[in-house]
Amino acid sequence: MPPNDSPAAAALEPDAIQQRRQIGFLNVAHGLDHFVLGIYPTVVIGLEAIYRRPYSELIVLSTAMFVAFGLFSLPAGWLADRVSRRAIMAAFFVGTGVALAGCAVAPSLPMLATALFLVGMFAAIYHPVGMAMLIQVSGARGRTLAFNGVCGNLGVALASGVTAVLASWLGWRGAFLVPALISLALGIAYLALVADDRHETGRRARVADIVLPRRAAVVFFALYLIISFCGGLTFNTIVVTLPKIIDERLGEGVALAAVGGLATAVFLCGAVAQMVVGRIAERVAPHLLFAAVVALLLGGAVWAVQASGMILLAALAVVMAALYGQVTVGDMVIARYTADAWRGRVYAVRYFLSFASAAVAVPGIAVLHARGGFDLVLVGLVGVTALFLAAVLGLVAVVTLAAPRTVAPAEPAAAE
Image (cartoon, rainbow, N blue to C red):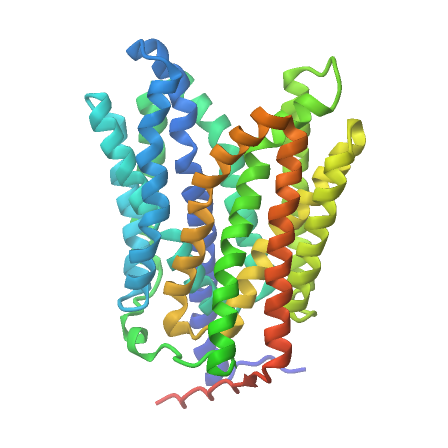
């Protein structure tokens, strides 16, 4: 077959390169986003000796960072639908770098808390803006979304270890300064290598790929509010409690290092499952796969209530696999029924609810554990997951019964 060296093929090549660059930067940004949130929770251990303050007092300084991370996703998504998404993502890299540098040079604890707030504010940009961009650039390709999710998970996994190494070599300020310089360098490279998109701002599609009737659309998005909150609550509950559940229910004589290693292995099951689900989602209707994955999550949670010893690890692996898998397929469902022009705001609300659920999860864990240990915590997890599944099944019913209309993609304009 002769090589395709036509002018049309040559014209497509720069677009393909730009897409790969954009996706690459978005993957790195997702990892960085979760990494920067994990710096202070590790650094704070060394600050106890430096400032001679208790951990309970110092860790509170990060509260504003996590509040800002959820709260500022809303204006970030609103801006992303109205101005250049490339410009907003550049602000993510540069702003996060400047805020981290502010942490590194903070002369007092109040100034450190202020700088941490700014870290959370700029870190909030990624999820509503980055996901809208990734959906647009990749065409909601399952494996691309799944790999992006794995990059975020790696950011979470590497944050503590890398920060501890940097702090031991360069001090706690160096643990902030090195990521600050990396983030600033990424921002400069992003502006230099990724093409301007201001010409696309007013041309974003205002009709979803699959259009629901108005009443069905209202029910669909109302259900997605429940799905987003329950999904976040389930995710935060299991992530926070996993190491302690293993420690308490695996049996006597298990060293702390072994508990940490087993917890890491369970988390890795989630990363692998995310890639598998991403590939399956390219062959199966996403809303049906969503229901199947959340049903698996409920089954794993019920199993974990009764399990102990090594069987518990298998049950938790099922829970973690389903938790990470539902994130990818859930984003794909939104993409199919939301127009590109509205996607930033829709993702902003989704991730705001997911992140805000942490404010309910942690106190809820404390109350339930105090009254009935992890048996009661896991029973509560089953209840929330059952509500999660009910909302997803309701969404499947809406999509199936509402006679949605598929919109054919517009033909590309001829090159001039």
